[in-house]
Length: 183
Figure 1 (spheres, rainbow, N blue to C red):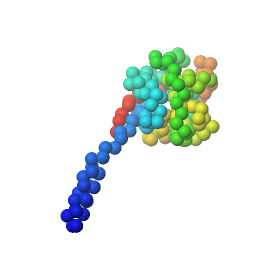
Figure 2: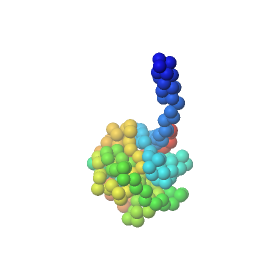
Figure 3: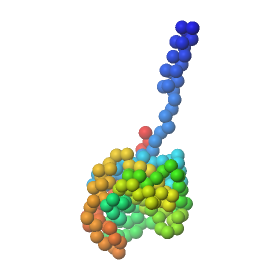
Figure 4: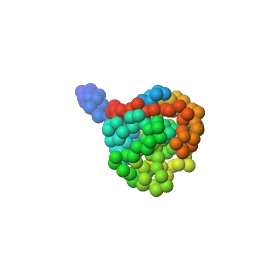
């Protein structure tokens, strides 16, 4: 009986080290105001996250600005250069992908879109505070895990109307690059 107990203990200890943890995917956003790290929900919204990952890996977001900044609501980016020039996604639009377990909590990352639910392409936003009235209407695909202080700093910048758009920061908030990592 003593040998069986030792064998069971050995098997449990051995198998614990052999269980593979599922890798998580992160996006590291480098801006002129600091770094934001986002966990991407690749398992729950694969179409949306793969679109974002493809754009990030292509360098699509490099040099774009946060063009819509509303304190206590969202900071939005992914479509405009500092001079107001629009940059369309080379991949077109994607269908609205909703997972009911993903909601617009503080730090949630979602796809911006036009009135058509299937019109999201490259623009995304980060929630500055919970925005649950957006739940079920916009695709949440990630959440900030580091750098909420940077999100708050961006959300509090002075804004104006620029290039015909409200809520554009007076001083540009620029994305230097987005790196995708697995851990």
